[in-house]
Image 1 (cartoon, helix red, strand yellow):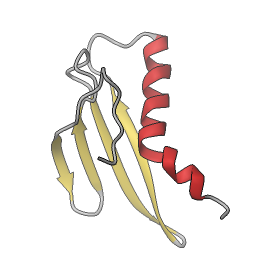
Image 2 (image 1 turned 90 degrees about the vertical axis):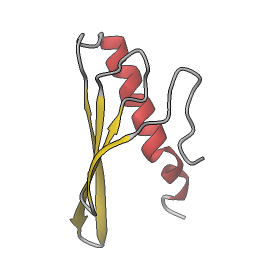
Image 3 (image 1 turned 180 degrees about the vertical axis):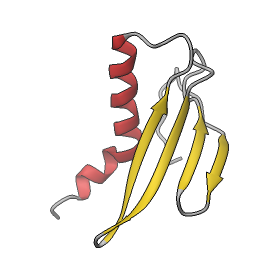
Length: 87
């Protein structure tokens, strides 16, 4: 699978989508069941952009959790692309 999850992560479900614009995933982390991940695609010069928004549910996450989630989402969504830059 393209989404290389860790042992404490789960495959997300698609909660909502708008074709060619947005996908909303359920949480990747079972211990944070109310979290959502929004993936947005937008036109850009020469192609398109992909941005993500992590919506944290209650309780608010600790600073260490915020750092971990940001790192994991960057790695899961964009990590393998780094190897293709400039080649």
